[in-house]
Image 1 (tube, rainbow, N blue to C red):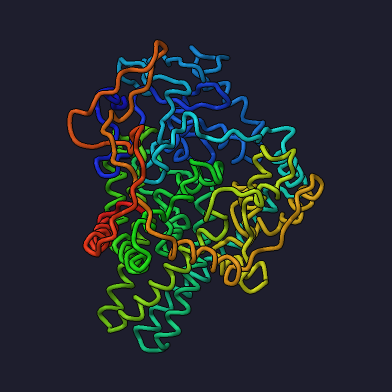
Image 2: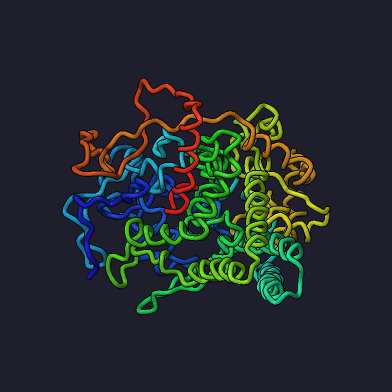
Length: 554
């Protein structure tokens, strides 16, 4: 029998203020309430997606992340919460407590409804705008299984490309990934034995790290069958490659990137929009050293501390065999990549090549940082020019927004080579509209079909943007030259999560002790520019660098 969740326990992280759900587990799909606790262990794509989305409306994920979502209706019917079957739960309602042996909970019913969805989505609040509230701010676009642009694209692709055909592209993609990984490891051996010069080591490392991170990006989207029973360690090595460019973080990327950025592109829930905003609080002259030191700390120690936090506070293994327990912090592949990065650092330090390692670290970090934000226009809010790319009848269509607000990137002009030089972003538009596909090769293969459907509805397929000459100058100007931004408003200590009942909201009381908190701006809060004194700026630099060492921030 699994361990119950206590309704009075603090389900939140003392380090980041991440607020997690309590009480009976629930998920919302198209206004209906479901309990997928039993189904998650049978889900063909793995259970991790459910563990990270408990207490959320996952309608967009269900409709946009499956090759044939209409076939899932039988599964939904089976797991709909019986007492609320057929009821639209967006009004204020409560879910009766569960008493069977599958997953006992406390005697306090867990609520379901628009007002009881996790306001901060169960992720670190610093990844979201201070005033973001998922209960009202999640976008509602058209991603119907029939009648939407997504349905038309999906149907045309499924008609022309079988699962077997696309898997061949995935296997070829994986073969190239392994070849690049071997070259990456060999490069370090050649350096420390003196067979290649330091400059060649730097060039090869930057290229192979970028390419391998791109492969990890696609693996992050793939099915993931987590181990069951006594075998508690998993080894999906491809997913952890996302971390090798010093920017990606696979432990949280499966949520922040796959589950939030992709379905909610450009909205307040898109954490990619605010991913590097902490850097913007530094004076422009301090951003390069500050961000570099921050990420060096993340690389050497910070992510390891973050993994411990995830295991202990955010996704604890409450009991052996509990399907709700998430062993992300114990992923063997994650620790293999962390160990490899330390091996590189120590080997270069011991053999006198530490300067070469630091140079490749610096170039890889900044190239990939700018690359991450170059594939969308996050420099400012949606402009009339951006919206004009979307035909007016499709302004509220999910697939049209994904295609028109994403950029394909070009480096040398060959799409198959650019796939690796751009960390998998050369076919970025197809990747965004078909996020379940498992490789860049598969995306390139179906691109003509997607372009054909877009032409039929009046969406112009723009040429790929030059990464070096078009996108980099814009993002470099934005992230390195804009004036320092003010810090978020001071947090107000509140209960980790106090949802309302059918009778109305419960009073919010201060917690008995310490964190967690959610940064909610007071009604009269007015942003104040940061102090301009040298002492304050240097202090901000050291605080930012130290946060990287302990794994806080991005």
